[in-house]
Image (cartoon, rainbow, N blue to C red; front, side):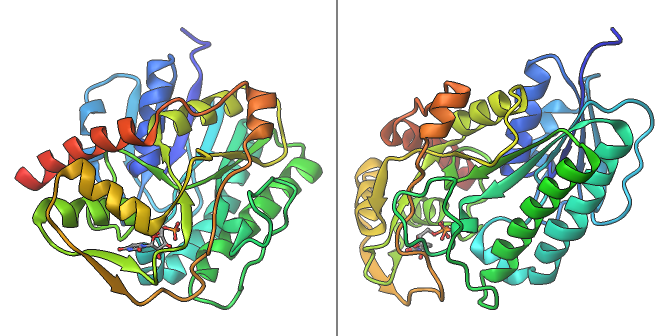
Length: 315
Ligand code: UDP
């Protein structure tokens, strides 16, 4: 019994954090989930209540984290993560990326635990290299509205590498590209739940700018599998996990209309400041190091997600 891995997931009640808790529990871990619930939700983890291998603690990880006993892994996923959320919560976003990462790394050092940082494709900003390999240093506006998230995550990567180099902490960094699936919030402002919600309610789909900007969407199960493989690898440098299947936002709106069989129209709205014009992960490193590549196509993943949101809207 004693060698069951014990893993702490910060932000464990969020979209990605909750799927990660499931994955770890299904693979024989005990999970301690920390979340202050500012963007996470108990609904995402309610199915785990009563499981003897799962414990939830409502906690703000920008404060000193104390956990009794052994801890083997710390997966730091706490942060507002959609542009709307981090524009609403700019200081909290900066704090959890900086102070929160510091506290989580401090815990890893004290416990001799492995640490995995949830970083982001936003470290590449509005990229001048396409697709984006991990070797690209990025093009981020530090003082623009998105800077609160991008710079917090860049700082978090720097701090993680410093703890690795100077304190010998066993670290991993995943750069997560646009991900979607069940447990996203309909109103988190991200393009996929927004379009699906609008299409299901018969409202106009709000395409920002002329919709020529691109994104590449990864289904959550694929992403979580990649992260789990990274955790179990010995790879220390940042690694992209995402689906390279790139699409313009306008084409994506048309695809959502088709899959929902909606009669909604498209309405063009103002493009947000510093909105990246293109984004596509170069996943050759993940293929090579983790033997990982995405398996779920956008059409399969979107159908699953549409069914999830249909039920949400009914409730
Ligand atoms: N977007 C859009 N309509 C919306 C929400 C987003 O056209 O209602 C666009 C947004 O301008 C961006 C892309 O969709 O170009 C993806 O935005 P999202 O907020 O999902 O995340 P990002 O990839 O920008 O972090």
